[in-house]
Image (tube, rainbow, N blue to C red; front, side, top):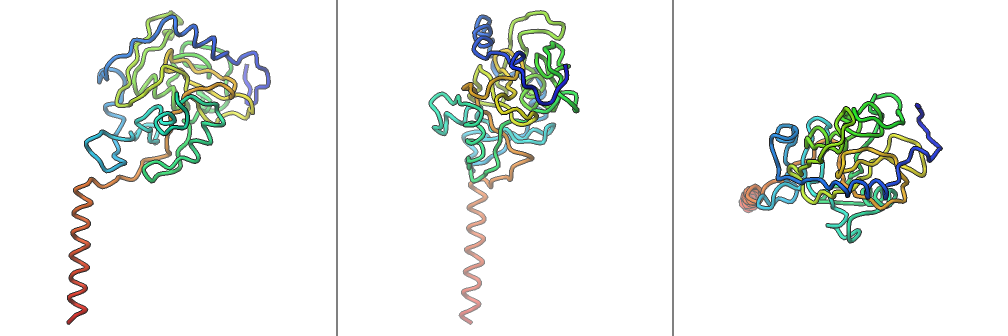
Amino acid sequence: MKSSTPTSTGWRRPVGLALALASLCAPAWSASNPAMGTWTTTLQGRELDGNTTNGFEAWYDTVLDITWLADANVAATRGATVTGLMGWQAATDFAANLSLYGLSGWRLPGNGPVNGSSFVFGTSYNGSTDAGWNITSTESELSHLYNVTLGNQGSYTTAGVARSIVTQDGPFTNILPNYYWSSGGISDTSGAWVVSFQGGDQSFVSKGNALGVWLVRDGDVPAVPEPGTWGLMGAGLAAVLAWRRRAAAR
């Protein structure tokens, strides 16, 4: 079935049921494994707070041309909610109003039709429809991150055979074993696309659910000078000012 404005609720997966089923086979979270996914070559660390001792605050995705926050649960870190989980509208507003390291323009990850033209509703295991597992299309930024960049193993193979879930966090922190909200891609006031970082599936659910918030920003972010660079800049500026004062006194 193809549509761009679904009105039936029959194909919306109940998130509570999905999470309950997923918990029966909890994922095996592994340490960052360079052999899984493409992240060691397609993600570039970005220093945003000027402190090189505490790791990168963001990662530029050279394939999707977006910048991911390194913190996958910034809503909790910033105190928006205790758990970081919130409804779709609250998540959208949180992103729109967030100024982080002097940068605004954050948003929820985007989601368009996996075939590039129109949404295909119906579940598949091989990533050929917009609901299901193993979606590798760059149209779904979260699914691409899960399946390609991080190389995570979802709960089903492309042939529909159940398997153990194996996931890693790569260079990111605070990834929730939960669904994350996506934005855009469909004109529906009650539902939105989500991607599970517990089982790898993409679903369309009610916006009233309390789910995870992982923020991105279009394009690359401007580099923040390292502390030593700030010192050199300050010294240079002081020298220029001193020269101007001496010149004025002549």
